[in-house]
Length: 444
Image (cartoon, rainbow, N blue to C red; front, side, top):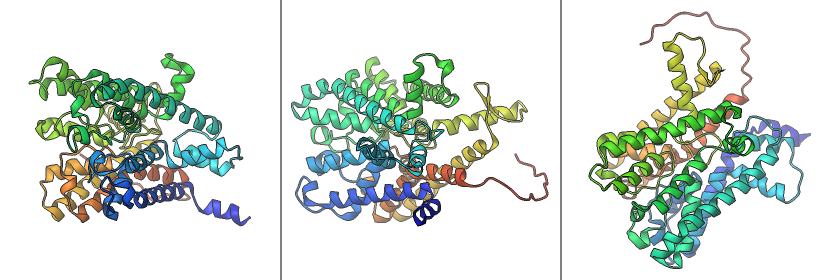
């Protein structure tokens, strides 16, 4: 009886947050150990905590170059944290419970449902097993596709590099181990015009970012788009638009000085990676102000619900756009694919937009005050953190303790904030026993 009472009191979203915190702290402790650094020295808890948070929140912002600072053990810890953070702490725990043959309670199934943003509890165990099996297969295929290019350049160490980058790309983390070969903080600039690396990495990012429910729709209905859930239709449509339109803009305005092959590779990659992946194939400081603004917007939008990606989510953008169209056309409710969107979803989407913008601006103001960094660079870093992206214009490693703590908080909020808001709304009763008098107010 007491156990049931505790389960009722302890709602699932605080448990999810506590699990994230626990994994982050465990990772930070492991990364402080001498065995984790290439030099064999102790790492400060601040740097270890920053790296662990970035890995679990699949962000990719770093204060120490992953390849040159961390040992193979440290890189292995980071990769494990990325995998756990990408697939979800609760999902990972429930997966091991499932394969061990233990019975899963209704409360645990409910937590799994919320963790992967599923619509119902029924079939949640099957869905979890499907997610992990599919994720493993995709990561193996991704590693196999990019391994020849890495091995031809770097020899046997290319095997580990291919595995690391495949998992990092699929989980939309943006961590790389290229620094030892092509310079610190270089990301994938070494392969900027190599389609045999760029295209597989882009596909890994896209597949990891479209969401687990969309995978299920594709697996069940194949290419019969009309039979997909409305959410999957929205995700695929918006994702395609957020790749093609920015890629065209980058191609026309930012990379016009490059040869056509490299220009196409750079434009495509820079359209895909800001959606929470965090890799880059070009020095971002050389891009135009318009290009950087497009990247900031893409970073805030992020991936899709129930995916390895962070950010506000593509569905949030779609709901807000549909609401704008509904207002312009004087419709009572926004509609997408001949389905009506309820008012609570619109309110949640608007709230998420305001929350993410507030976090971005507030964090930038604090960093600008604490370190005196240019405000446009601060905006870029905070948008990258709250969107769990990891793209950087080189500011993060030079920041002080206060600014690093701000980025840690933003990364954590970016990974759990939207989820917490949605679950808090879902856990509310939604019943008003009385209503206040209504009065009109002019807007706009």
